[in-house]
Length: 256
Image (cartoon, rainbow, N blue to C red):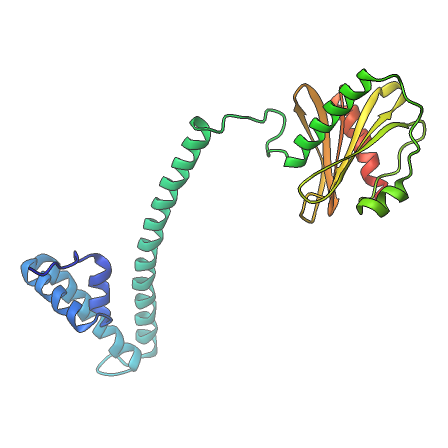
């Protein structure tokens, strides 16, 4: 026994437009012979389509310009109706897919949430926090070292990372190179005077962007982060968020 694909609205529209293969047209006509109400609607559509074509071609008794224009509007309306139906079906699928994704995000494996930023922070911010934690532990385990010989030009030549100009009174106490996915990253501990010890982290994240200073609290520390071109930066500390963001904006302006 031959299995016939179900006849759907798209098949009926294609039948009216004469776009079906001969075999599929026979199947549609067989279906219409068993469903007289649907057949009547299809025949009405075919009649309207024929009249429209006559009007657009200027044939028969419909020859006035205004009538032909009305026929064109009607035909566009019929086409738009079909397109709208298709878009509605696609939208329904999109809603279902989105709902499933939201449910997975809310109740599935991913349970982390951002409370200080409406947009999740880039991955390099997590790298910056880990570097800060590592350097803090290392400094606690060794005697206070002498001021580091900070040379931003040498760092730029070695890593292709441009570092911002530090405000007067800031002093680099430690500088380390950490590995990252797109090359080395730089993490410096800075004595910022009354603002305490801060960490300045810089890395090439693998994309080009210009992002203004944003703020997030992560693992008990405050982080202000931004990106200029191919280099991203993060200023991290335990102080007040407002002061940290202000310092970050000053550093960002020095890079222009």
